[in-house]
Image (cartoon, rainbow, N blue to C red):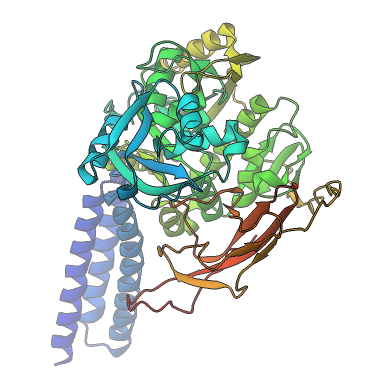
Length: 602
């Protein structure tokens, strides 16, 4: 009977071992030499178990039971890691679309609340816009007169003068208009949103383990959905030769004055190419640098913070000693040399430009240094301890056209040779200027005119990498004398001069108990708000959220959110009042918010 039980145990162990080895082979990420080693280990292990379990010897049987249990535990752990990996790969590169949100805007005091209230709508169009598709969707909802304008300035002038009822404009383009026209803040409200998803068609695959290839890295200056079109504040080209282990990082300033692919007339800032989708950014940089870009990676603030924290922090070289500003998300003192950074510190380091001697040029150098730190940590043995956490942190925080097969090949190659990579950085340069732009043709904006010599130099470096030449490294192989950034208490904003109060100051009133909503719920933030002013009568306050005008597309985050009401009377007396919105989850769908709310830390 005992031998029969042992036979069953041994059969199960042998069967599980076989299944596990088949599963490892199917992942296609384990190099052949490791597969052969695993085969040898499992065969020896199973042979050893055979002799231990089939001997009529109590102590040997017990040892066999213990070793069987250990093997099952080891297989379970490895299976977990491999399952996390394959789950990550399953969705890799599947998010190949761009998302545009077209807003129907009306004046705040127009009285229009829905599409049915409108008789006409204004719009502008260009070669890269999907406005016609948005109009088609709008006309499926309501019959309305469509009035085309040559530019946004004339269109908004007519809206403000009530010559037209509404305008249709893409959300990120509206953010650009708000930036150039601060007086517009709070003047408009969104009564309808049209969402358009378009597949991104960039297919230039290559053999990533045998042939040099180029990747466009785009950093979006925002949190949230990675698919939404947005200005690209980080623009970097990575040319990689997998044979020589050479990586060339070329940083292109966000305000570089270039011809957007597919356009005629005015050139534009490179950052504005992102308004029309990553394919426009890729095409524009291909034309500028005369290189074929095989892949793109599009990341945002969330991506950088998550990956750096999942890696347990990274060591980043700083060319300067400086303190980052509050606008970067944190005030930190960085010293010249290597600094060990967590996610928030790396993000602050990457965003700072005003405290650096070279401004945006120096910021590009810092961003390259962060990528160097990430690559060095991600290709080191230290990655093993945080492997599953890293993959989990990346889900949904980036967008790429690189296939899961390409990534598997790169991982397999790195596991096979565990080689260190030589990283060289270069930045394009330019001269300050002021020009009309394709995206904003009615007003001159700050631009950086390219210095052609730096563009030619970058093209030459790319050619050298493709030819298999090794370049001079921009960073040490290993970080030495690493410092920890010091948090600096931000200085309070200078108090504005107290204006002379004329007449009676307005009073903003509402129930100050925090509003509790379910995530995704839409609420009316003005329904219970009153503004009293004896001279001006009822006034409507402006609502801002995270420093930007609150619209129907603004998204409250899980946890505590704060909005600000602001009202100014005819005597120029301004009053502000803050309100708390607490967002909770409703996991069981019963319409009642859950109690376990996670509040973001500052």
